[in-house]
Image (cartoon, rainbow, N blue to C red; front, side, top):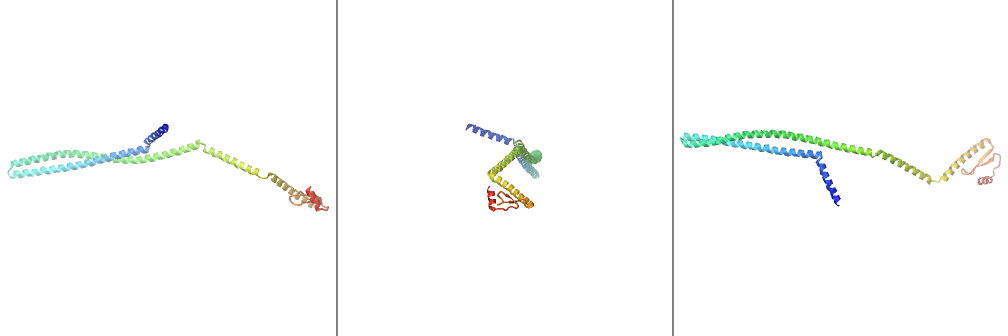
Length: 250
């Protein structure tokens, strides 16, 4: 029980190790990391642009306020109220100083935004290249795996001697065919075959003797039928059918 559990655990970790070393898995993971970085940079650029716009709005408001208090100081001077004019000019200076500070901050923010924009463009290009290369490498890896598998099958087929096995099976089939033919031959009536062959030869000899008797007039060949032994008689003798039968029976 414990050995089986240990074997299962070992197989599980070997499977994980194989996946970690899988090129396709590593490429996908790396590409996902690049995508995550790209998303973060895009968010940073968006935030930088938003901050830049906020600074521009604040700068414009402070400039407007500075101009408003400048106008009020002029109005106070026109009314002869120097004290009120001084207060208006102080307030105008505060907004003008804030505007100057915002201009400095806005300039730095624009530089940061520009840098982030450039970095985003570069990163987008890198991610696109990474995606293309990832697809190519995955395709090459799959092709290599298929080729390796095919070569492995071919090497095993050669090593195992597939053709040798086929040749052996062909020889075995031939042996079985020969055995079947032998059994078929043994199963037939050999004695009957021998008699039929013998009878065929007797028929030929009988016909030959008949031809000779008809041509020379010396002897005549008389047979009861094609399967009986022939009886030879002189051409001028009278043939008694009973004598022929007795001769045939002998």
